[in-house]
Length: 425
Image (tube, rainbow, N blue to C red; front, top):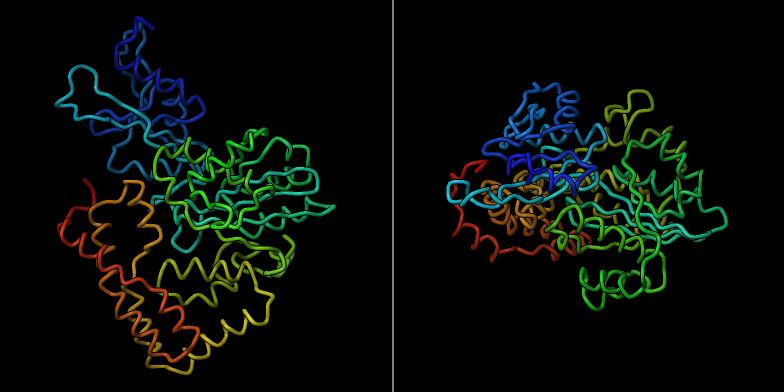
């Protein structure tokens, strides 16, 4: 180690903490990779492999990507099953005395992606956390990019088919599981054979006190009442494991995960994996594409948020006739009011993907242009609410009443951001 240059010593110290990830190490305008990481990235992304003097007799293998366009390279590595640790310069190199301070700002994994260029607008990107014990399972499906989690608890003699059915409902890109789940070969075999997702093993033994502290830090002292998580159930362990994983990988921004939706199987139609595939709800049986599916036929949505909601509705058909009729009443009202529907569609075209924009703002990765887009969307909210209320439909009026006009947010942004702000800094 003493023979190495100071910068390479720093690199190896950081790499030691992230042995399982590819380290994107910021040097000036590039993210550089060295040694085995360089060999891997060069091979997987077909990049030119070079070398760098590092203090040893032989040059260290090296390859790099421009920092302003790194997302595309990370996306390709993630799609191939790798994790990427982003190591950033923590001070201005021009003002640094000696070696520039560097540190990991985030670890990108399949289930924790928030960058718009790495996500599909019309599809949620879920990370699942499953805690299995005997004939019971606590399940949590969270979309980090929108700050929303869906939770449920399952109890039955044959638990495996029920867990598999939930996995098929959400199609997570990453699954966290406790060691107890490894004994259930039916679930692990299904994930390995049928699901294109990364798998992480999390700790089995959680001290009840630490679990409560974790949930309290995230949701407040009244976390049980606020989230619907039972104080003695397995969901609390699944959620605690998820939060710990996010704090380890995301470093900051985890506070964005605030919306927790509790559901039970009785709310939705139970569809086996085979039934889902044959119905071709969201992807075709042969080409596994959207064209030719029920979603393709129905999707006339105007916003990214609407596209994701429609997909979730199709993947989770309601059972309650009252809930179904509430939906149909709103649809009927819009079908019968052509003028109002046209005006509403016109307004929706100007609504940006606020869910994901807010997440990037909390994580500190939103660009000035994206922040300004939020203000432009806020300017459209009064008219959008007025249009929804004019439809004279109780269901739509109730939804319109929930729209916060966000005047304070709009004012703050317009006072701070230049309308001509660049896409990148």
